[in-house]
Length: 398
Image (cartoon, rainbow, N blue to C red; front, side, top):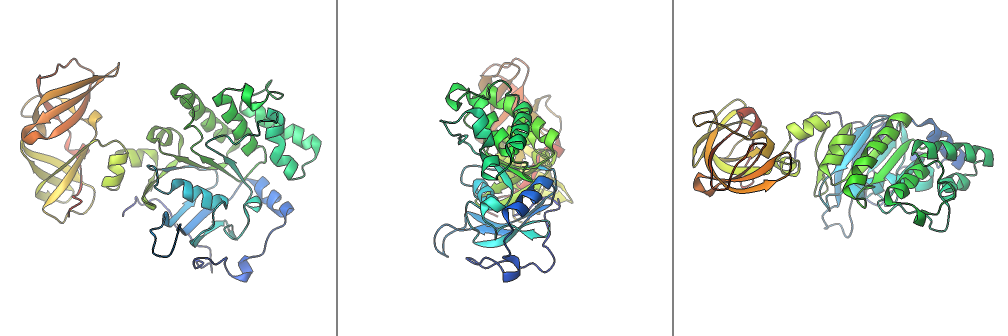
């Protein structure tokens, strides 16, 4: 598996990985007092490091749900863990939170080892997918619950609660019960409850998946605004590419428990590290073809219609390779243009501002393209793709 050359390293001096089931050397098992945890959490600063974090469910022979996850999260970053269901993203979040123990590896905040501490001493705030609000408590009491558990004085509780509710724009709703709020408002309460304790790290587990499309768009902007105003390091789990692209400073793409790529949204979107990432990030056209020639990064593949020029993203060693192309990077052009593929329109899906075309080229190869022009089913067209946007990866069989 490959990843972009974004810094994802860093083991604290003298730190070693714990074997499965171990809790680390005695020198690392010094538990902090709750007061110490609160003081550290209030600082809201620090570099989070995951070193070889692994989690298995079942015996030693079972495949890990999370395998050797190593990355560094800088103070104040917004990191999205992105991938399909079962890829290990929620497992990674729960390992950070301490809700499930590690099978191997270590988690550090600066020089302090966290995976040997119980969840309540890690100083994190968490937002759950299903809100997890107390239905019999008012908005105010839900938000204050974590502060009461920490023994914060009443005057300070009131000050922090008012600020948190103002930050998520819920002033005037303090005395309502959760059942009297909309889904979006309930999620705002959950966010307020997570940030009111002034955590050094905010963890969010698919917080928008239960909302409708309009509310998801609104809450994306709200979460990003709250992050900008507070500057808290945030780890956000999602399976939605648009959420990750629009909100995150960097994206970690996971597949079958293994990190495939880490990079900025622009890097992950435009330059997927491998075919798994390309397919997940919207490269709907993936065509396996014969490899005709290669000169450095410039590649020529041979399709039933003729040559297809592209750019190699990984080393190509076999006789075949896969071209990955986004539908929105195909235009309808003239015959004779570079990478012009003659095709017939087999289907048209109308989306308002544009249409998604299903094209059939020579050899029965199907391509998907987006266009703003009027095109009819059965019409003959030429699909044109710039060579730099035909990304070429090794064939899976190779």
